[in-house]
Length: 161
Image 1 (spheres, rainbow, N blue to C red):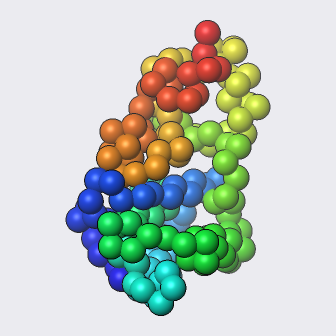
Image 2: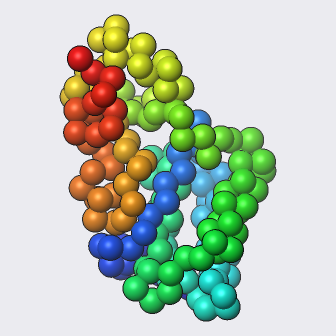
């Protein structure tokens, strides 16, 4: 059951998928329609899952699930992963690779393999104040407070000296 992401409780679970490139306006509109359909039909053992989504910066798909009503099950999580994999193929985009880092570079969102980000940190091309996206957050409260943070406040800090 699709609901506005902003109405989901703070403890709702989130999954964040970062794209290795920006979506075009047309792709964003198409992906929204596909997300609407997927979430409206997303269930766990036949029970509706109250969910919402955001597309942030034309690059991140954020899916939120109110687990107070019904929890995600192995099958429902598998269904969401298959949905995201389908988007990857259809739009020739990488959404599942967690070994990449997205960060702000002025007005733009940069995307680098983790090894490149580590090298940039060593070379001082990124700093403790560089705004990074911590895609390891697990709920909406963490998403709002700890997703878009200075590198020193996220797991990225281990690469900064």
